[in-house]
Length: 506
Image 1: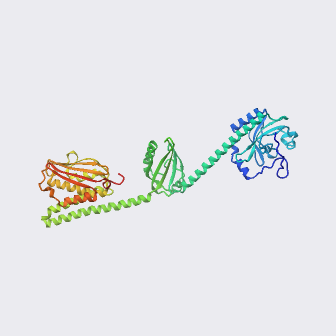
Image 2: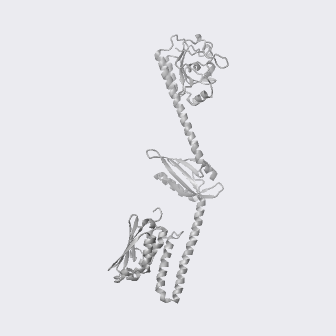
Image 3: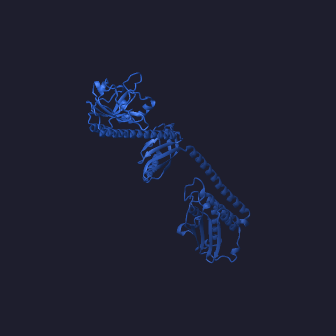
């Protein structure tokens, strides 16, 4: 049985050992969150078993603080704490092993102790030190009897008390680790909130079911509201569309993106672009959503101004086409011998006008921005559908507006020549235009059917129209072409670069 050396208590008293009390030990004790460990079920089971094992009426887990000892779990006592000056455990925690006091009335350290001379009349005491992983003494797991025990604990009881002391420290260590993890998580969350509050956008999060549970400070700064759980700040005309898009993202798991208006704190509705992406676990299940809303109102205003300018320029260009055709008509009246040339020139100008109509900004009527739409518009004068003189079949793709002009010129020339000399010059003739996807290229097959046989010297024809087609295809569209004259009509095969032809991103 080990009996620690008597050490004077600070201030001259000999009632309790000096333990180097200071801020470090106080901080270590605080790191276990002792308030929440009082009456802990696991610790309660340990003290009950310790009492049975050592056959004592009292068992305690005591934490020795600066001015008191507090009991986290106890059996056989009602008091939850005593002054440190009467603490047996203040000695036991420094012993390094189980400390036993066979008869407290005969021990000079404790004979006059109030816990010996009064309730609970301690006679026998055995305490297992409770020491932190970093070597700081915390208290003890002790058993107490009201009768002396000259022979102390049995070897099995001593070993059992040591094992139970380790179990107490495992429980305390688990609690400490949990608090440290919680503190680290709270610090991390605080840093993320600070980061979210610093960005010039509204940031938010929602659970897997789409229930919003966080908005950053920018929401309050922008709207004057601390929350927007039900879209209170949305423009009434935009709320339904935004809700439908949000529900669709929740259903499919696809990212959410929409533009909508939101009321600023001064009452002005501003255009925002809202985006959200899901966070998934290792099994691919969505566990959270994170989103932002960024003010793009100034960009909208700039885009509107740009579109207004583009529409004005487009209108002026359209007028220029009309003025040029008018000037040509006036000139031909004075020089009728140039009528055929003038008619061809005006035809080309009208083709350019149709191409411009097709790609002009702000126009939302009819097929827009596709190859098929442009071809249908160019060949509208020759009929449409199954009864049209030019029948279009095959591949379609979004078209780059810069490609519309050379395409319009190419197919205007082919159709004009056909109307003069080829299939469109007869009532029964027609043209099959087949468009095929060639990967990096697009193929056009212009096949005239039912026209008159070609002139014998047709291969030598290299007029202005032919040069215009060649320049448009090889120069502007990055392609190549070939004509084949047959008895039943002209066959033209054209291959152009898909990258040049197609709109960006198609």
